[in-house]
Length: 124
Image (cartoon, rainbow, N blue to C red; front, side):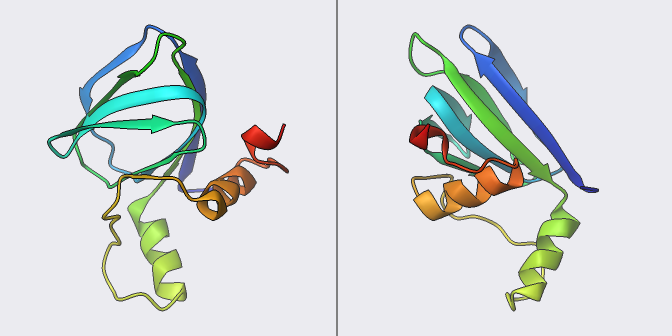
């Protein structure tokens, strides 16, 4: 889909240095734990967790457990997200997410659909 990049990865020893994306970052943790600094806090997201990062926010990323982590990430363009929000009747402007890590099965399943999955990873 135009305006959306995808990533699927599994890391054990890899560490992301401080960086930012011009896009939103919607990550679904499939396995293990990802640990990352974001907004002045050290956060952890485990299997089934959804990480919601706003555009241009500096963050890191590394394994939060010896087995590492696996995840799938959608990187939608802010204009695309704003358009969807407007279609849903949200107020004008670029949306932002007040919570960075959520454990919400409905949100996780929606992300699964974005990757063409028929089931949530923990259902397998």
